Image (cartoon, rainbow, N blue to C red; front, side, top):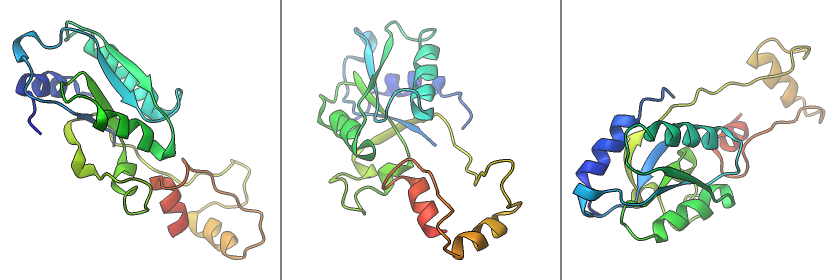
Length: 177
């Protein structure tokens, strides 16, 4: 798959956000001089309102200063990102449909949830890197991760863990703990 150098440079120049989503493009060597001639769709493979969606919207807003056309956010949630990413992979490779990807793209095929891998996309800009933490209520009886894990190992059924869903990096991390 060939990339448009001008598109890569334009979008890479905009990647100023500190933090692990990658902007990925399904592009071909289009008519670079006139690109883009219509709005670009940025597919977010998750529900509106989450961190990935917020990042994509901030990025799209920042592009207004540097691009002759707007970037439109299209949320296509489902199957831990598979539906949105597959949509981009099935699109014409003309640079008008991009996707924000997350680390889950590297795990989905190994879990049998997707027939594609991260190698089927071409990263063109890093937008952020997310820190991770184990958090509990302020009034919880645990003060360290070790205390929390010791209580969880007792198996009294009083510990619950929240994450982004099956196959998400946080689901895998919780399972490993």
